[in-house]
Image (cartoon, rainbow, N blue to C red; front, side, top):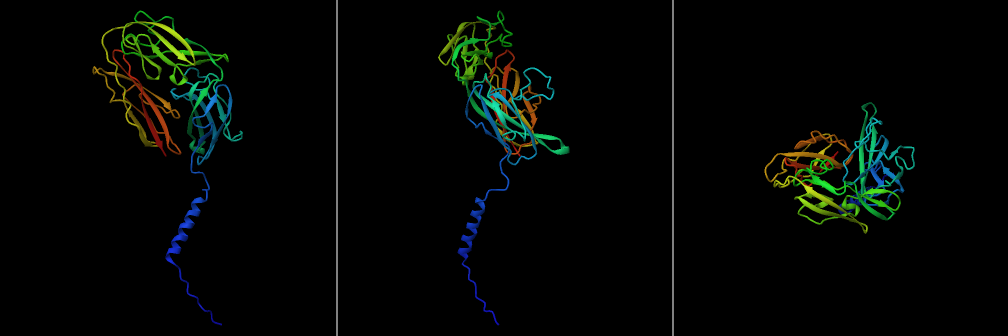
Length: 355
């Protein structure tokens, strides 16, 4: 018996359409493993949280495998990035306490109940650092962080200043209160606290907490951005602080060296992207002093898991870019001071580390 062959005619356009449909269908199929890396999913970026309440900390591991523990830290938005020391007996401001340690058996895994700081107010960073086991190679860490807004439920009842009253600045006053202030151009923070109806005293110096400043004599002390104050002349002034309908005043007497001095300008350089494992150099060499005097430099890190900055008091600093699973941003702050004691406003630079 013979078999009759039937010729098969295929239209080229039909083949193209078939290929496109198959490709589209494959795109709809989710990958076997998530493409993203370790990430905080709760609380969410920008969320408003009530101070003193408990929320759930939740993370997804993504493609980061071998995570054995996750440690959580709270920071003010502009606070220097600090981490817990291995020596649990260490004390002082260099230690940032761990507020939660999440492990695999917890609910949710590597998360759990997280206490929002009772004395928190304004923007705060939640930093989660995951420790990854690499067997005989030891461990490495990855991190994620979100910025949330912490708001106390209680009303503000009073404002106070954590200073001598009246405040005297200069050679005849309390120079040690703010470091070296015996000069024109010195910039300082005024320690301000608020008493709230829940019995908690909170620091409200930052404008982000709702505080505004005014000087009755801006030729003596002028108000700068971020709630910073600068000495610009000798004499008396009254500083007024306002927040949530409450107000407080502080008499200030300034008696400093009145030699003319223009404050310097800090320049931390342009933002940059680098590869993990590379040596990163930050330069403040473009910082300027109007009188051409030598400058003193002070670098600090205010975002990202803590890195070791080499030569933090030099014009140029460096660090080793950590291992990351996806691009992560590290932010650094530079302040410069001239030889006569005048300060610059802070300058910031972001370094994005890529895998």
